[in-house]
Image 1 (cartoon, helix red, strand yellow):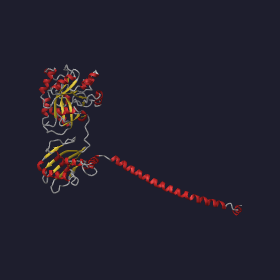
Image 2 (cartoon, rainbow, N blue to C red):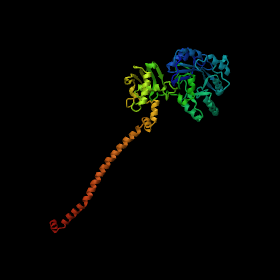
Image 3 (cartoon, rainbow, N blue to C red):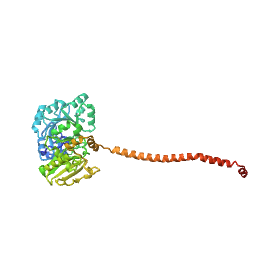
Length: 462
């Protein structure tokens, strides 16, 4: 892989169990490649960022694979698949490690040079003891296809398997069946966060023979600055955060990917950020505050000159020093698969409004603004001086949607209750009016009833 500068950590697709024609169980007629370049091209075509060359008891093709990948983005880690006394173990070294060094380790383990490549030549040591020697020689070990034949999990004594799983020199366990990952975690009862990985073994789905088109069909995603051995070590040491057996989804929060300045003393400088960035660290005068103010300037989210006049004057002075008239600040923002470029030009007598290019709708909130808020150190101090200021910081960060919905629903029900109460009060008032009139009605009825008792009326009724 071509040299690359240090970059933020990200997930890389890796296949840590690759066989070449150096393995004596490879059938040249069906494998699909006769030189290292073809294997490198197959790995790249499969979307892999790194592979480990792990032929059976030999490092014969490691140098050729490294040379074939020299001018490509593929990281090639040299290694070997060892036949220990208990089963198969992958041993992997840093890229650039000479095959001769690995062959010397094989001799130290008891495999004579004449026996290199002999699939059936087994070591006298088991998983843990072999792993200790590999670790002492700068390598990293993974129990190969642990849930299959010659795998660690197939050993008959459960207590011994568990002790081996807890051995710190075993960096990870490779499984074929993805459901085995949870079973391994369960049997360890929280005693160790052991990394579980999946690799192709250069076999196609449903097949057992090594074939080029099988590269990458099982893979692991590791989070690192670069998928070299150092990055792999860091990832396997922190599997909950840095190892995935399925492709990680793109982050659903807004991420500042980079800030680029054109003009001023920062001309042509690009600052790349990790998606997990939470703070900027550095000594006094290293530019932390300036970088934050450049982001705020580009997003038009600077300090309010009415609320914080002194802070705003300091910020304007800093920008005048860093930028010249006509300088631009560009920010690349991402959210999931959405991507947006924000560009703003600086002028002392009045800067332009930000220009948004790309998936703006997916990255802006209801207000049409990017949902990122920044504060200068001086501004935070001013906010901290008063309780109202602190509440002003807290309130925008609260998601009150549920409470607002409940409030609206409650107000609606209260209005309905109010109308019902008004209707009931009207009914009660009518009933009271009728009750007040009842004595008069009864009196009239009594008078009418007395009229029917008159003799004249009675005679007419006859």
